[in-house]
Length: 199
Image (cartoon, rainbow, N blue to C red; front, side, top):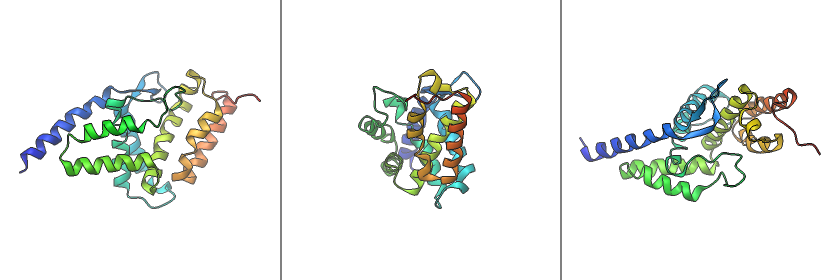
């Protein structure tokens, strides 16, 4: 038995418990409680498994699940950047890469390398798995906001075009899910929970 590996893995497992304390701006479905990063990652993993048949291309679902479980671990160090933040760019990858190296670096080197590679693949969004994983990541808050009378859209005065521009990433992984999401956005405008900027 490799005791050294086990001790490193346990150290990593203890460290990622901190993910449960990272609060997101979005609220749970039909709720006023903020979601944390661990809840978000679990939900995305379940969504990926349940919705896999709607991926435009065949995907390695285990890899997709790894991606969505791993993708926000860097926020233990880097914090959660709100997707509609007007000050800090949501793609703050330098800061996040340092976090990835530190946190995944707690693991035995082979595992650390694998997890950093999976994290980078998700961030780059180029492979079929990354495209589908990112679709899940953009879909979940959309479902939450529609269940919460506009949620963060209303709270932070985010207009339709900004939401649309961020959500269209869904289309890269699944035309079917994008069609559903686009309809939800249009319904949200009709209900008055998502505002279109007047010309």
